[in-house]
Structure formats: structure tokens, C-alpha cells
Length: 274
Image (tube, rainbow, N blue to C red; front, side):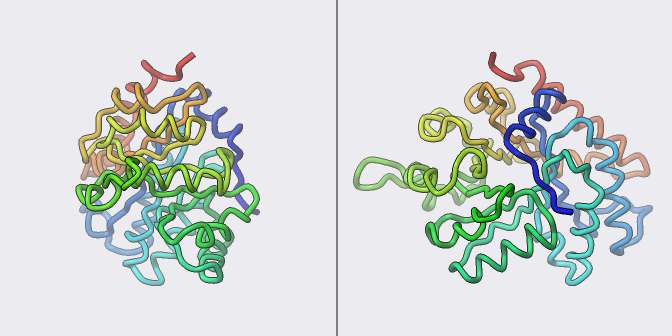
């Protein structure tokens, strides 16, 4: 049975939980609490505990696929079994940052939408429309395009001003927003670039933004909420390491809940603009 969450259903979850929190399950076997073995079963046990303690506080989980792919065949097994642990009304993102020519893109889409059964996948738009179209052809699934990332190297290309006066990431937004719609496309916008949210919202006022960089990377929650939130919520604010590694003992899951609750409380106060 395939996972499908519509824009309407995602908005309902945000309003019900008073949360835009996305928990990043970037699980590194070498960083598991010392009482857990270093094997694939322990990865699943760890993820299960985090999910059980946070599923009422978040509306999405994001699996950075690199942490799993580095494990070889055990990694794909861990991803598939982690997705099965996540409630069907909670959004699942495969953070894979894929893109390729059309026929190859179609196989990536099949792997992540059908076999892994993720609701969404992160993609690089820089190979153009034909590299993204195979993903958009999946009814009920979502694409999340890189727009303005939170890393230091974003300035190498993404923020360069073009001859017509526009900035490259703005050109990407203007061009790609017509490929899909606000019902099947989101954009990655780093929390460490919060001053750009107003510019971004002028171009894509209705699209959801996936916002990494809050927590360990130092993004400011209040700035993100003030400049990026919409009447529908409009944001999935991701925190990974600051939540899942907030504790290193046998109480790691309850410590993760405390950190997730702290972030959810920050969201709740300035929640949705009425």
C-alpha cells in the first residue's frame, strides 16, 4: 500500500499538532548510544524509539539517505523498515538530492516512491525540467527542489547575481515553479539564510518550504517563522542532530522528545498567521 499525503492533509496535520517540525532521522551507526550494538537491528531500534517519542510533535520525518546508503545493502533495509514504523499520516521525505536525465530519473523515482514508499524526495533542479518531470508524473507524490541551501558553499553559485540583475536561486524558483504546482512541489530553503525568505515568498508565495539549518547549524526559528510562514503553515522546519543525538544514554529517546517539544513550543507561540 503506497503512502500518499495531499497538501490539504499536510495542512490539517500542521494545524492539529500546532507544529511544522520535521525530525531528521540521520542515523549514524557509529553515533548510537553505547548500550546499543553496531548493527542494522540497533539502527531500527534507535529509529523506532525516536519515532515513538516524537510522532505527536512533528508532521514529517526526513531520512538523509547517505547515512543509510553508506551501510551498503543493510542501509536500504534500514530505510524501508524505518518508513514502515512511521504513521501513514506523517510525511516521509527521502533526502537523496537526486537528478539525472529522464530515463535514469524515472528509475530513481521508482526506487524512492514505489520501493521505499517515501512521500517526497529532494532533487537538484540544475539539469533542467526533463530531469524532474519523471518525479512529477507520480500522482500523490512530492518533489522538493533545492533552492537556497544552508551550507557555506551556497554562495559559490546560488547567490550569484546574473546579468539581468536577478540572483541565480531566484531564477531557479521562477523557472521551476511552473513545472509542477504548490500541490506537488516544495523548495529547500536553509534557515541560515532567513533574510532571503521575503524574496523567496514573493516568487513562490504558496509553495511549502523545507527548512534545514535550525538547531545544530544555528538557524533562528523566530526569523524563519516571521519571514517564511503562510496562512497554511507553509514550512517544514527540520532538525536532525539536535534532536536525535540530544541524549547518549539509555534515556536518549526521552531526551530527544524534550528537544522536539522545545522546538514545537517555539513554533506554537508564533504559529500560523491568521
